[in-house]
Length: 260
Length: 299
Picture (cartoon, rainbow over the protein chains, first blue to last red):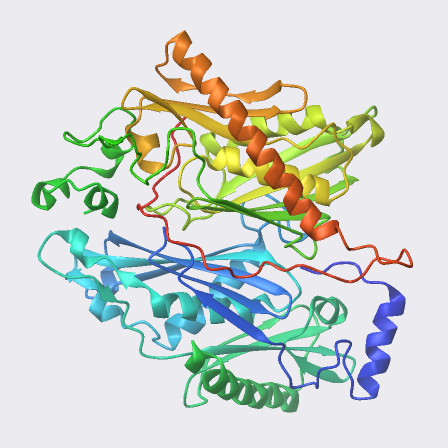
């Protein structure tokens, strides 16, 4: 997802970093303003639009009836896809999802799945035969860096408002709210030079050497991780990113998720 | 059962959920007893025959694009962005005498009631092609040889008439990108429901009506740039539909101009410098469509 960036801008961001400053005036451990809107797509069972600074991600939840996995006969199925819409940025191509889109979908999926955010057992209709399939579709509409955190937040918001259309089964059941038990929050940090910042803008992503996403739950426990781009983190740096993720997770849960 | 049916007042929920979904979207398989026009001459959503659904256009909503616009047209929610003129990939597509125009119409997976598999299908490929051809005509492509002008139309929620709404909003996005064109292109569909010629069919009318006639034109010159039709119209009915669509295109043309003016008028300050008044894809409360939108018209 890297784009070209001028040497002058690159130097400027590095120089600012040495003075403990960022190009948009944030602190290293400060995230951009978040706006979440839910339920705007009438055709989706759940939907959310998340603005993280200038990054905009729309997530739609659709529910369908399908077969369970053989090794989880009594559980619903979650499938996540992401599209880096060519509409959103000049570097996104049309066509089948590229590696970047697949990585984005899989990292988002892991955060939701491993934290057991959705109570999949409640999505069983007939054990071993029929279960609800939750389709989570992530659509990037404007790109200014850090799709990972925006997507996880959008996914959670869309899932939280989603309704399972159980009345369509015709066996007397009523529609119910998708059972959400946990609220995982992803936090992405990038490293350029010796500096680590969270919630990078596109400019910061473009000059970064390494990226690390850590998804934590309400207890501050780690539920998913992904190191990205070339470059490396030292063990103390990894621990620092985990701490920043816990701190950000707590902040977002208290100030964003509780408000929605 | 599908909410669309319940809204229409068919009172057989016990049998109706066995109707396979596919069957319900084929034009002409109207459930018995369903009337699309009430005795007072109003349509299911309360409109007159020649009345458009509410339309709202915002300009400049995608930061990274050269031009962009967002439209809410009844239950349709569509985003369009323009990139270019820019380099052509792959290079063999480039034309040394003019710019090529490549439109990609795409529906989000969650934009229809049965999840759509992501990626292009035959329908969206055809729509992309006919819309590309419309803009190839209006853009002064000879000014930008060896380049491409890429137009992306993303349907976020569909409620019939998405190609018309998509074309309408893409035209505004092209103007926002500063691409020189003959004119803006408004687009609207005509059609026939319960034997009556109407404009701007919404989902149920599209599904159970007798004809659908999407048209795009330049109102100033009267040139027709897009015309498709499926269903059954007599020549007289066609003439009547064409008249109604022409009127509607005039209305939409004004809305397109107003949207551009609301972004650009006042942008230049007294000292001639542009003020920094960026617009964002703002959340605005939209009335939920009265019916459950489904897959778009299966032309």
